[in-house]
Amino acid sequence: MSNEKKRFFVSYRRRATPDGNLARILVQRLESAGHEVFIDVHMTIGTRWIEEIEQRIRWCDYLIVLLSEES
Image (cartoon, one colour):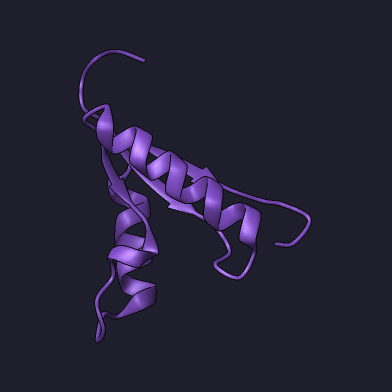
């Protein structure tokens, strides 16, 4: 990956502990490297979830989907 800023969408199941833990680590590291990251915790009350998710999927350069046995 080049040094240019990329946009990431991190998808995970909130109730799956390993997924949530890994998602937080990924977000922290990607943002520390200067990239933009979308994760659902950034969504505010009143957001139209489906529309926002669809828009962010189109927006991102990379979509990361976390799957574990719990998810």
